[in-house]
Image 1: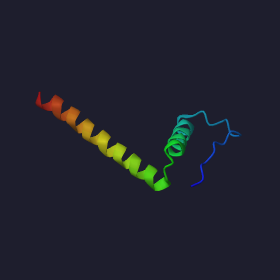
Image 2: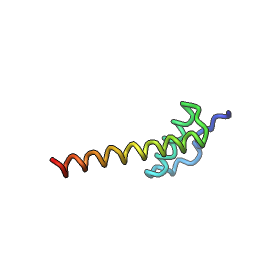
Image 3: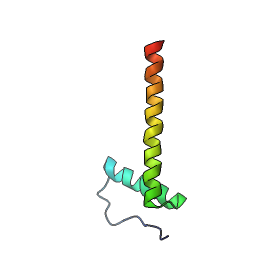
Length: 63
């Protein structure tokens, strides 16, 4: 699998979206993940966040 390189020529992407893209690319390169594995990782992160949020809301409603 070829590692993707950062596009250093385009330094205008100082926005939050540019930061998230660079962070995702860094994670993908570091752990050598495919695009599908990154998709599964983001899906699991969303499920985990939803479970934690529902547990917090459940705690505050019942106590």
